[in-house]
Image (cartoon, rainbow, N blue to C red):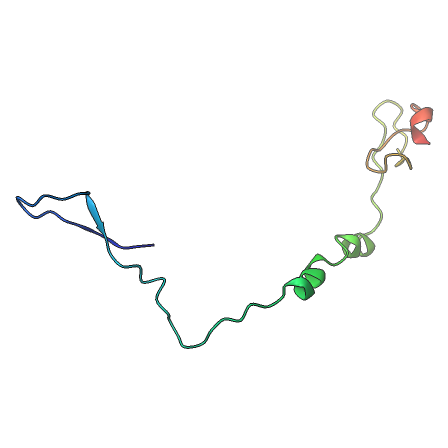
Length: 94
C-alpha cells in the first residue's frame, strides 16, 4: 500500500489533499527470484477423494426415530440424505 503524506504548508496550493509516496512494496526485497511452479501436482494432492476418507473412518450414523411411530428410519436409495420411515412412508423408502 503506498504511503501518503499530508501536505499542510501555509499558503501552498495543492492539487490534492494527499501526496502519494513511492510504493516500497514493489521494490525487490532480495536477490532470489520466485519461479512459478505448475500447481497441477499439488492440486491433485489437495483435492484427494473429498470426504471419502472421513466417511470410512466414522461409524455408520444411528438412524433417528420416526416422530409418529417411534421406529428407526432408513436412508432410501433414491435420496440417501433424507431419513424416512418405512412404516409411515412405504413408497418413499424405495
